[in-house]
Length: 272
Image 1: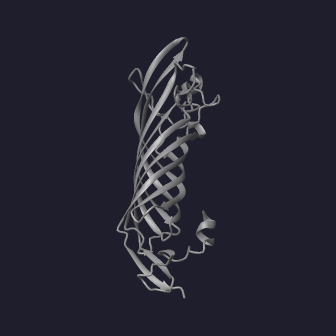
Image 2: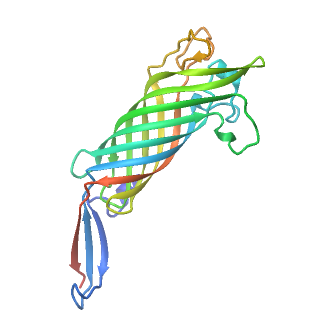
């Protein structure tokens, strides 16, 4: 990413420059021309992306990704590892050059202990699922907004509501649980590339690290049978379904971008 930003021969100008030899005799007979196309940075970028998510820390279940009921009961992990995400992101430039952009995003992520069993004959009687709805704000550096291939990196804060459900077998008895919604504040760090197809549409590819419960961790025992809380704060009394746990994951994603406010100008320069 940084090599592209600093060593690309066209990385310094703010505007995109596409050179093309013009041989059309209607322009000028007996001469070849260079075509120079200049585009301004978008005034708004809207991105829709899908992610594959892979849990890390306590969001990564032990035993090679399989759910371990005892570890979940005693708060050693969240019991899941794999997931997917949907993202709708708006990016607003802070100045005309378009390098720095503020971002706002709506995100949905789902994690399940059964994801890696989709194509397997093994049947899991126990499972855990989580739904994560997030709203995020951040800042991003688009290193070369004037090129067709654009590198970017950013950081943001997110507020998330995390809920879910589970079925856990204990002493030969299977019990279903509802995981009550919990509000947490976290952050994400990401980088990627955009490729311009035309002046209004582009593709994106990116990597992202998300830590959804950096702040507001809490462990509280529910008084309602069959309900448990997220319980991600450290406890000393070894309460069931409670323990210090990080709700964090890495993502790889692809998406499509729509650019608003892009204008094009074409200039012709005689080659000889």
